[in-house]
Every structure is written in C-alpha cells, then in structure tokens.
Length: 481
Ligand code: ADP
Ligand code: MG
Image 1 (cartoon, rainbow, N blue to C red):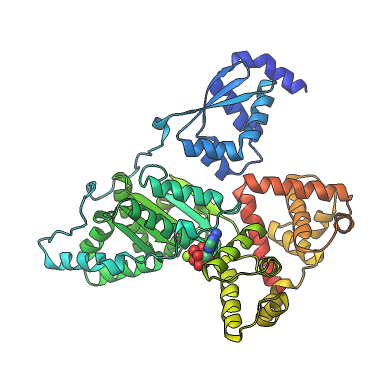
Image 2 (cartoon, rainbow, N blue to C red):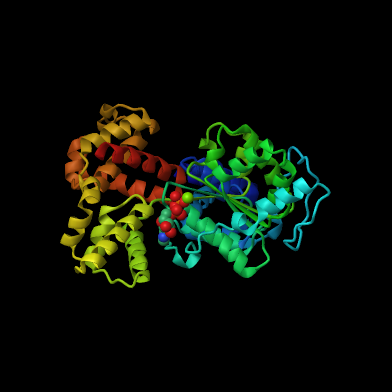
C-alpha cells in the first residue's frame, strides 16, 4: 500500500518510458527471459494521459498476441506502478521492426532477389551441374502434400506457433525472420513448416522454397566438400531460394563445417530479406555445441513453441483424421483414445490408423472394448497410473531439491516452484483428490488448489515453465514404461 502511494507521488515526475522500465524491473521478475525479451521489452510506452497508457508495437500480430495473452498482466503491473487503474491504447509503428546489424559481414556480396528460378550456366560446368543437380525439383520440393494449414488442428498448446507460421506464410521475409519453431517429437513441427512452404507457393507459384532436413543439409555439405562443388552448393542455398525451411536444426550440433556454411547462408538470405524458418526440439540456448553467432541469430526473429496438445485438441485431431478417412467414431471411443495416448500426435495418429485398419478388415463396429482389444498393448503402458511418491521423487531430482523440501515449509523460490510443480503434476497424473494430495505434502487442500491454479495460469505465460513440466513428464513416462 505504502509503495503504491509512493509511486503515485513519484508518477508525475516519470516519463512514460520510465514507467515501462519500472514495470519491467519490478513486475516481470517472475516471467521467463524468453517471454520478456520476445514480448515485453520490445514494447514502447509512448504516452500516459490520465488513466490511458499508450503502448507502441511493431505490428498487428504483436498487438493481438499481447492483448490475448498479457493484457491483464500489463494492466495490473502498470496499475501498480501508477497507483491507479489504467486503460491501454495500442499504436502500431512499422519502423519498430528490428533489423539487427550483422556483427560480421557475410563473406559473399549480398545476393539480391532473382525473380526467375532459371539457373544460369556458370563458367565452370562443374559448378553449374551441381547447382542444377541440387536444385532439381525432386531435391528441392519434398513438402509432404498432406501437411497443410487446413489439416492442422490448432488449440491452446500450439496456437501461438500456428499464428506465427501463418503470419510468416502470408508475409515471408518481412514479419518474423528467422522463425524458430520449437517443440517435442511428433507435435507438428514438420507439418507446420511444410504448411508455410505450401502457402507461400500457393500465393506465388514462382517462389523458390527449399525444404531440407538438417541431416540432409549436412550430407549436402559433406558431398560438396568431397567433390569440390562448394560453389554449386552455395548457389543452391543462397541464390536460388526465396524461403528456406530447415527441419530439426538441432542436428547440426557439433558439426563445425555445416554450421560454418549455414552461418553464411543465413547471413546472405537474411540480408536480402528472404525467409528463414528452422525447427528444433530444443530452444536455441539449449542446443549443445553450436556456435554462439548462430545461436544468437536464431533469436533475432521469433521463437515460437509447440506444446503437447491438451485433451480437447487431441479429440479434435482424432475427429478430423477420422473424418478424412470417412469413419465416424463415437464420442466415447474418441475420448477413450484421446485419454490414452497423450503426449504425441504422431502416436495418436498411429493408434487411430491401426484401429481403423483392424476394424475395416474385421468389419467390426468400433467400441471401447474393441479399441482395448486391438490397441491393448499400447494402452496398458499409457494407463498405468503414477504414484504421488514417484512424481515427488522425479520432480525433486529434476530441480535438484530433496523430497523433504517438497513436503516442508521453506518458502525460498528454489523450493516453492518445484513444490508447486509436484502438486500440479500429482493432480494431473494421479486420481488423488485435493485433500489426498494435501496430506501427502503435509499441507491443507486449499494450498494444493492454489498451487494448481498458479501453475495452470503461469503455464499460459511462461514457455520455460512449460518446458520444465514437459521435461518432468517425459521422465515420468520413462518411469511408467
Ligand atoms: P514433428 O516434426 O514435430 O516431430 P510432425 O509434424 O511430423 O511432428 O507431426 C507428426 C504427425 O502428427 C504428422 O502426421 C502431423 O500431420 C500430425 N500432427 C501433429 N500435430 C497436429 C495437429 N495439431 N493437427 C493435426 N495433425 C497434427
Ligand atoms: Mg519433424
């Protein structure tokens, strides 16, 4: 209270910009660095008139995302800083798009946009052949034709990534460059990145899209080095490209030559405003053995994460896929399947395909019992329930605290977070009621309820927390298996 009064007294002396700085410093320390750097630091607070605070952002997408996800947080925080209630007005300023200067200029001169895909014959036949070779349609165009935006089911776990991919697909090279798509195995990274490729091409049939897995890219580098056809290789990736999609970039970890080539490709494409999209199962700062200059470039544009789908999204995915196969599944069967296969869309899809194949061969109606019979071996594994004890043990190990700390009363941050995570996961993965979980942790049931609510709401704001929970859930799955 006294703090709020102090702030009121100080407010007239502070500029709008300073108020924002204070908000960042005082109200955002519980927010992950990633969220802070991506969403909150780039905002400019340009004016405060009475209760109206004007915030400036670089584009509509940015504004929409902030209004959908952080507006309450911002209003509360600014309210605290100004000691009164506030309203927000948004202003869009194109000039705010950050275009960092390259610390090291690329070795090649900047390659400008080449409007036709035609490959000119270079003086050396070798080089031209390689470029032609590497850029031939079958090599360049490996986009899976099923992986379209309209076949992708968006939900809370992936809607940010989905929106970001659509924004990039609509305005390649201008909105978010590079786009770094991050998420666990089988969660739709390849699907989304391919959808971007299809979309760009639908808007502009001449667009030259290169889709390549990091593994294939590495092979290309090795091949080019071995056969002394580096120039053709570089042409393929720097010159004859409007958008490059590199899948599973984490696989270039430890491969120095590949990283070196990729670095120069990145610079050349980036400089000439061509779109770069990479996917990874790790965040940039978690990829081991990768050059710092590449790591930092991955963060220049936008880092978007995909989380495992929640139940409703899994149900929607099953419905969509069943419909595509012209099969109608009862609600009961759909929910049963969606409850049983939780962490990975590829597995969910696999279970459905197996089920439909069996049912059509045996001409049997699909009931829950039939699902259990056909997919029993898959389900057993997923359904064995976890004990609160093992959840506590795994959480404690993961966060480097003791189980006794989880059950204790110390309120230091390093313990409070793991404790709340353990409570949340007990609620999510066991049948324990709030009072039962409470007695395990030596706490009142209301403590458990508020911990679960807290984690639930922080999950929406904080990708780092989502990642930690996902890591723990993976460990739990191993225990179950
Ligand atoms: P990743 O590249 O992240 O490992 P994929 O893109 O290969 O995952 O996805 C695995 C499978 O799951 C694909 O067949 C994809 O079409 C499907 N899939 C994943 N997420 C979704 C989604 N949200 N909606 C529809 N299909 C999805
Ligand atoms: Mg993939």
